[in-house]
Length: 114
Ligand code: 5GP
Ligand code: ZN
Image (cartoon, rainbow, N blue to C red):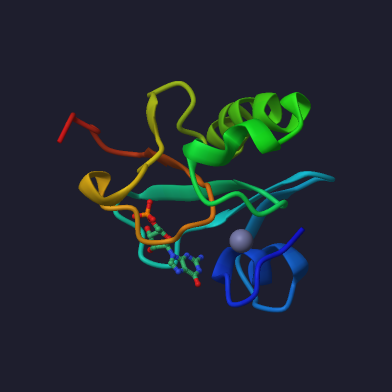
């Protein structure tokens, strides 16, 4: 299910372009438009859920694949060896801007805690 006006639903459906790194049935990974690290990729479920608050709506296999795809993307982008941050901004205090669940995969430099 997609949600009207959701930018990541539009990317998932192909309505809006993105630099896709990985594409499979339930999960998409694409380069962040405003990268905060040399490697900055977003991994999303194609189905719309706004945040971790709704993660229970996703099939368990999709949730698992988000984690596995993060690692696969890190390998593809050559940061798996050096390490990378896997981060989900959830809600206001975390600075979540796009309310379609997404995980950031960031690497290529030291990624400290904020
Ligand atoms: P959040 O703070 O919600 O976790 O992060 C949202 C991320 O989505 C930001 O890093 C932002 O640069 C990225 N972003 C927002 N709009 C677009 C877009 O249209 N395309 C791509 N590729 N990334 C986007
Ligand atoms: Zn969405």
